[in-house]
Length: 283
Image: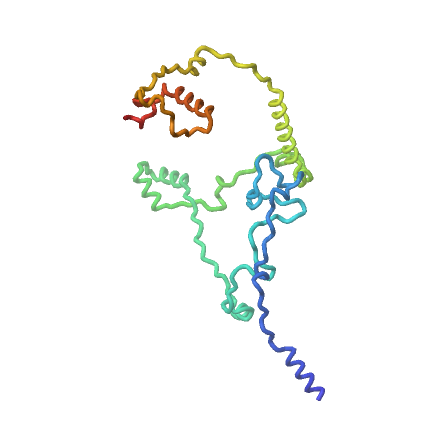
């Protein structure tokens, strides 16, 4: 009986478990919140001058990585258990295929190196044979093709130049790079301080700028502002309607009425039409 229990326990132990289903939040967790203007403090890497917008800190090409912190991203990425790429199953054969069928790369036959012609030897032989013309030289070279061997090619073998024994080759080593200044962005901080100092100097210069006195009016400026007076002709009224009062008054007070008539009289000089009321008031 105890042996049967142990066998059942082993069967349940090696039984295939169902696959664990992951939720969408586990596969694609929410992204990290991107930086905003409110998160930027003085002295941070992403501190900027001038106009700053929240969209600047959502661009991965602009956002800098803070010292000792990961780079801020604004896009969502899969979870930790996500595998990138494409996995092809059952095509390579695995280890048995690699051991049983060893593919050896066969070296391609290389073409022999063609030796260059020895024109000096061929010209010397043609002169000894009494051949002078170009046609005779051409036929002689076809029949007597002399090549330069690799051992006798002295033109390619140049003797090393004579140099003093204490001579050193190469160039001088440049001064060491200030790595601590580069890691701490010292040059950026100096540039930012310089820009801030320039802005303060510009503001002080504008504040202490001498304000010129009042400009005097010239005759041309006065004539430009002058409005010629307009002679007003009294409107004709019928005799039996002269003592009749107005039945409609659209102005709230008499002051508003006089102000409107005054503005109308000032603009009559530039208005067009028979009644000087505009382009669309022709009778």
